[in-house]
Image (cartoon, rainbow, N blue to C red):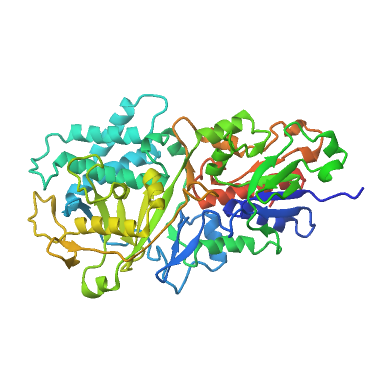
Length: 550
């Protein structure tokens, strides 16, 4: 009987899948050790990386930043592929912190930095403490975080509850601060709380959570970031993916192949497979949406945690037989959230007729259920924390949304989004005269069109991502939810069958392997975490076949 090469099928042509495929191919190409195939359900490679264009600018609908360039494998690929420079304007081309920043409260009140700074410093230092970093700044912050920690109940502590303890402690320390007469319908306490809530909304988008109360406190200190600056990729993030895919032979990546079922052999190969009957003795069989199928010796699953969550539901049963209990528990307990980006373009006359350049606008709102809120501002709009140009002086501005509001925005029409943003920004960047109150705030002035009811800002184009409603992703990235831990990510990363060391045939072992950002304990939610997980699983297979791993 002619011996067959082991067949490896990788599900998903995103960062993790293509990292694994390129590693396997480049490591064994000279010996042609494997038969390799990457199946992708969509019509493009990249997964949750998707570079696009909007109004003449290169923008990212998915992953945007290299989070720390020192030691980052993504930065290395971008550097080697000459992707760090571009003549075309692109999102983030001048960094994230170079914009003029103003903080404006609902009603058009620009807040004095001296009012915003104490609350911002408090929030920043509370996060630093949670993440295990030294607390900086004044002694008050140190006292507050120590008090919060001593008062925290053991067990499933959330990031959200710890942050709110910090705010309450802050009010206890500063209760005798100088009098504040109020601004419009804002009291000092309501304004401070709204500034704090603005930072909470920003962290929700960063963490992909609908509520910070669901974000586990203890896991935050395990999360790791690479040192160095954070940069966008001038040539487009998708070019990194294309670089990985370019080493693979034509035909290795098959698009439009949606995997619906994965059959595997938890007890090892059946007698039929052992004797070579069936499909060449290969223990895993993939069934596609078009009715076709393919058998494999090893399958690397790189689909999103959202797809896995759907796949373990009884009405779906993606795995036949179902996954073992530890794997199901890991998938169920870990958090998986949604973050969407909304890009809008200002009309051309906006900058032609105004000396004012659109700022990095930090938005402070009354709570959605407050009787003091402006009813013209949509409820979903109150989930945003900022709106800023994608680079200095750009007419294209960007805002981020997380959770339920992000999902709601995916279903809105372009006109509804444009009108919601236009109404909100016009409310904030009002030109009605107002005297400065207690050095706290003043009526914002931006030089927009004056209609007699305050200056109006009207956007004319919009583009938004839709990661939540896309069935190939069902969200954006993972987080450690309250009730889960890094141990669950390790469990998710374990290959199947779990007793593979006791199986009698090499073809029975490592049938299903798992990669993707949700399987990396310390770098989850990132592209480099996805990349590292793909390399990890490729190396696992190379070692399995006694191939030297470099």
